[in-house]
Length: 125
Image (tube, rainbow, N blue to C red):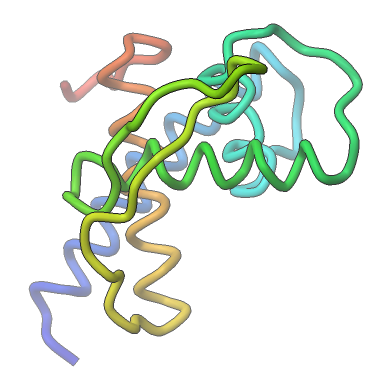
């Protein structure tokens, strides 16, 4: 295994854990990637929190993933539908990546999202 990638994973993990810790002080302990994706989806939808159906929760996670992968060039925001839900266009197929690489990408993208939107800040930033 390449030492550079191990260091990169470690750096991303440290930043992710700090972001998660800050969010947990606001929203409560025990947040995982799914709950963070849900939070991003709710935020991007812009309706505020409500009781969402199972299908809506799935759509919110899809919105989050599209939003998070947009800066990487995988998706492009197309607009809102008649119910004001965001829609995205797939620009390029996401290459196969293993579970560890998926976790790394999502943690990196979540960290960037919360930092770039000034929802949290890192002491080292």
